[in-house]
Length: 248
Ligand code: DX5
Ligand code: ZN
Image 1 (cartoon, rainbow, N blue to C red):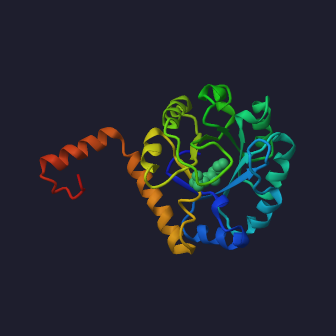
Image 2 (cartoon, rainbow, N blue to C red):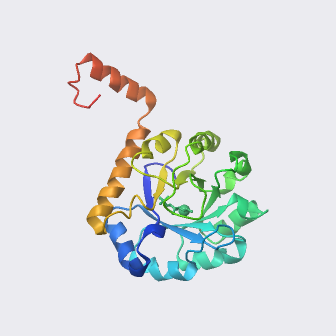
């Protein structure tokens, strides 16, 4: 599960009165995954939706359902989310004392297992979980609400987790306050899955959502250009007086 940049719109920012249409719109607009934020009013100070809503919208698209559980406890509900049609189920490292058990339970249900870290949780919390996960989700806001500002100190954590992951086939996802303005730095730090709610569901319908997704994707891809290659390109632009065509 590694490779190209993935854009995962969070349906938390969708118009809930037209949720089915909104899913179809982001599908047609080029979303790679559909990010579903499940909140319980206990682990986080907000309530969103549960497995029945996910089951109801599942037929709207064939895209991967990336289900982010901001709930505690998690284990009693994993089977319900698996049956509702989740492809990836992510639990929080802070949600309970037995992270390893939760991750094994997700894989036993035949789903990809993810682990998420709140901003104040250090990367060491998942050091011994990495052989049991398919995805690490770094929260770049405090979970609970859409539309918050990106927390820049998390960039260092993303870099450290990228190093910890090494060659393992693990996706590194960022979630919270992602916009075209910071997509490049999160990708440069090592993130390859970008969740965005408010920055995608801006405007109305497929055309606007498509432009929003594309702006984030292009910025992230630009951020991913290896530094050495970037410096070489920079030197080329200087030495040929800018004739290579790319803006300096
Ligand atoms: C926060 C959620 C995020 C959030 C993203 O608790 O996990 O997925 O909705 O929304 P924006 O992109 O608006 O920060
Ligand atoms: Zn989320």
